[in-house]
Image 1 (cartoon, one colour):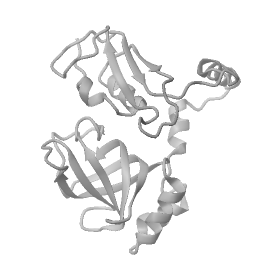
Image 2 (cartoon, one colour):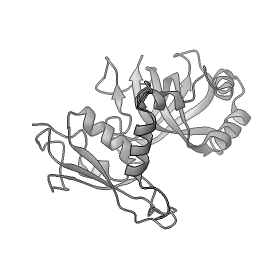
Image 3 (spheres, helix red, strand yellow):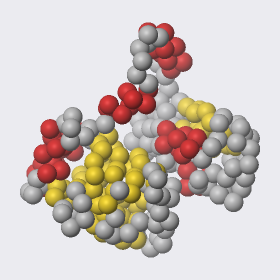
Image 4 (cartoon, helix red, strand yellow):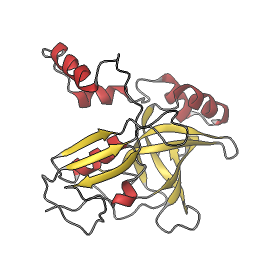
Length: 239
């Protein structure tokens, strides 16, 4: 019997792929996505965001509840209706599998290669090393918003988000503690457990200012008022 890493309420509105990763890392073996095909514009409701999660038909649960590891879990998420003239997701996957029978790289390796790092992207390398990041940060977001970046940094400041006691706004600089450079990154309105997806051999009970981290995150936007480059965390590891 296993407990879920978050409650049904906390999973709602998160990206479905990250939720599936959380559940499989927790040990569940029968987790399936379920597109709702309910979006028209995607302006109000975000594409790929979770609407409900059902575990053996139960869509209301907390971290105190326990389920068999092979429980049927359906992750229902908002999506645009598939054009009937377009190949289905299953057909596309089957074609991809057929065409890559002789290829050896795994899908996880392919995904890894898509991340922007200082080794494969000059713009990110310049951004993380600059001592005057403001114009570079704005230009970087305009060019790479929605892409995934990976870098070493540290937690420069943490503050409660509004009146919440378990949600935070976290300021991150690149490099190591006391050796800051690059732009001011911010993780906005995040829960340390359910949003930061802590991983690696040293998973702490909480995070503190000064912690050196390795982060993988999507470029989410730019806050011109605070000169903040906003990130949507995928995984966070203590270094």
